[in-house]
Image 1 (cartoon, one colour):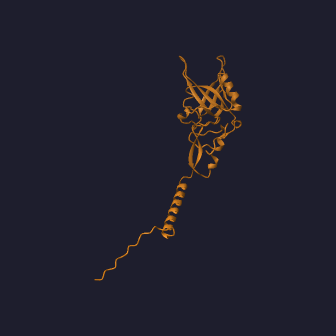
Image 2: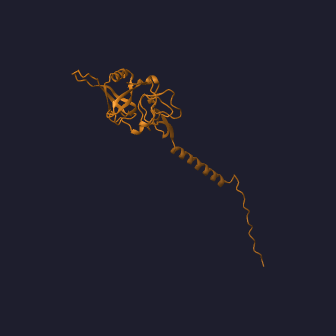
Image 3: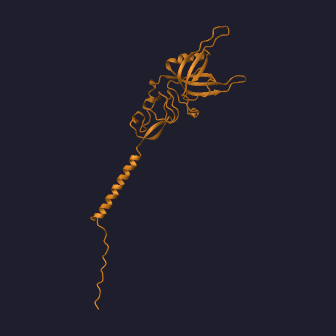
Length: 235
């Protein structure tokens, strides 16, 4: 009988780097990795910026606690806001109000000489100061004190317009007396004397909140920084 030919099994060989299929596979992996990296980079184009930790009032000194870093998506006008790549300049002061959580404009911080505000403490009745908090804006009206012998009715005048509130502190009155509230205002330098004279003359001071300029009550818990020219206390 004639024996049938037995097939010879071919030994598997390790693929060579010259194998075109291996080269194509490696190339596809590299292309996929590159495209994936670009896709991730394009979806995370955020940049670090400074945002206000609490309500910043014109006249505040800028401290490390005044701002916090937030990552936001890059926009065409981001150049007008403070980048968190560098800390705020030492010795800076707030020259315009910035609400808690808002990005800080570059124009909001400046040197002490550009502030032009001083802090003056006035005392108002609790009713007049109801609802006020740090960051509020108020108009200050002054009614001079008159003697009992005077028949002329005192004239009320507006001394300040939209003054920033630095702090509010209410103290309970004694027996039979009304509670009083001490309100520290940021007063333009050229109006400080008028306000101090009204306080020293025991005039009646009435604070009228400016519509739309009263922050949330929670912002009143923000620590009160030292003003650029210090505090000018009233009597």
